[in-house]
Each structure stands twice: as structure tokens, then as C-alpha cells.
Image (cartoon, rainbow, N blue to C red; front, side, top):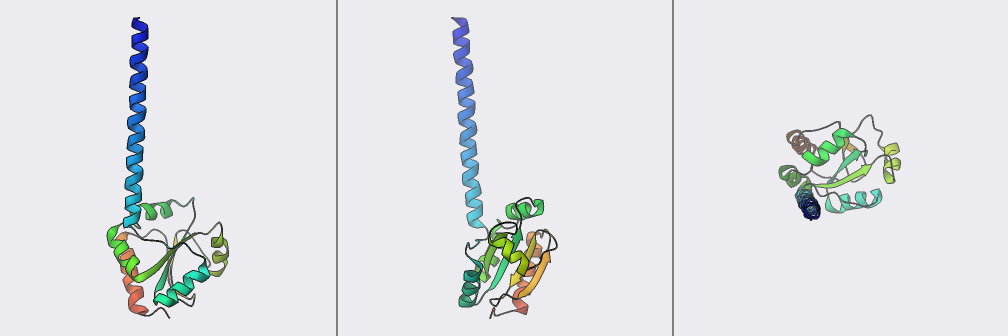
Length: 158
């Protein structure tokens, strides 16, 4: 009888730990989604549609050229693009897009916009011309400064 009670206690404890762990995981997922909602809002569309949208809204395109295996790309996605101060500038003043340069339309765009390293961040006008290109991880402050410098150089996207 003692063995059965002990077994039930162990199973109950194990079940409790699993439930709590899953609950924390769900809460973490919710926090992650909320962080992304606060961050830069990236438009998902074909490149031709992005160019049309940039022309219609008279905005520069902010283009994050990344790969799935790129460590600095992941850090920017996690620590820079999710910041409210960065999002405030980019969501207001740019058409924001990101493409995995090793799949889908990213492969085609890699031919049009040659890359030396990842991440490569492009600022592109509505005609598809590169206004500014930067390579590598950017701090939130530097990325905001880059956005402001692009805006001073190109007050109109068309």
C-alpha cells in the first residue's frame, strides 16, 4: 500500500510539473507575440506589390535580407526589430519587408540586390533603386539613425 501511495504521489508531482511547464511555455509564447506586435510590422507580399505600395504611399522600402541560419539576423529580429522606439520610426515612415534570401522570392531578389554578408539591410525607393545599404548587425540606436539619414537624403520615395 505504501508503494502505491508513493507511486501516485510521484505521478501527481510529475503531472503538476508538466502542466506548470506547459503553462509557462504558453505565457512565453503570448509575450513573444505581443513583442512582435509592438515591433516593426513587416509586409508580406510579392516584390512587385511592395514597389507599387511604396509608390502609392510615397515611402522608402526597408528591406531586411536575411537567412534562417544567420545568428546576427536572429539577434536583430529578437532585440532590435521588436523595440518600440525602432518600430515607431519604421512603421510610420517605411514599407518594411524581409525575405529569406535562400528561398522563395528571396533567391530572385539576391540576383537583383547582390549580397556580401548577412544581414544586409537595404533602403530602396519605389523604382527599386538602392538608396542605402548596410551590412551586419545594427544596434537599435544606429538603425534609427540610419532611417533618419535616409529620410533626409530622400524625402520622397518617387
